[in-house]
Image 1 (cartoon, rainbow, N blue to C red):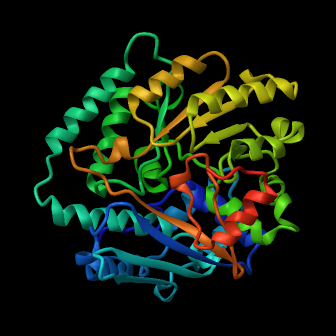
Image 2: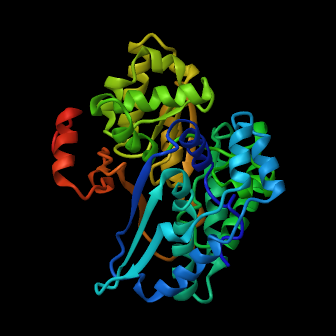
Length: 392
């Protein structure tokens, strides 16, 4: 079985799930899978289904709940809920298509489906690679990882810290474990090291790493259906987050409607309230400059705020960004596929995105058009009009 613990997922799934429990317990959602590698997955439908069946047999163990409970922002009633929680197979379907692709649909109560995304993506990846690469070239993976570590330990980079954001697109769980152990030992962890931590809660617990994460796109997308009116949905999302965490977990995601729409809503109040923002689409250098200018415009010292970069980063790109913004703000870098699936094989380009909430379409309109995902063109056009977003 690929997934053997419900903690084998990203921290932001739990931080969002707690908001859902407390503020939107009745929300109904639908997620859709997308793979940009054509015709790659249909032969493995039955295997994927079996692994998901195994996933749905899992429960949180007492030690896992104790680990979550020790986090300062996790509340006791949420732990009580997780103590009786179990993923239900009836909310997920996997089907092969004549094109050679697969269709994965997740549909049901948000509270009971939110934990499917990351492990299902990890399952799809590992099933694919264990069938197509029966004798993986781990030596090549180690060579590449060693080269990256060498770059990160270069002159003038001792304050550059990276984190692992690669659970969903990892080559496999065993390689993920080895990569994290190598990064921890070679770069050092905690305050003095260059390895800041991981988004994966299970590995954070096992390896003594810092678990990292706040919110993802689905949270702000769902607010399109849950808020008072569409134009205020981004503000509603940030205010609901602040209501839950009272200033903790203060990193705002900036690209659900594109950077310009984000800056219009991220006013002085949010500039002061939130600790920083996360980049996940569009040109990262332009984004960083615009964020710093926006903080200055709102009379907030950018040096007190954190800019997190997490969009398809490689180590060389991370170093370029670090050199451009070092000393001008606080910096964090989340690297995914390039850390957990770089053994010389082409990675799968796969995502699972929310497409409906409470029966109505929801969407992301990012600064990278290929990242948009919505099956309702009329709604997309309306969203662009409401948020004053130009057609790409």
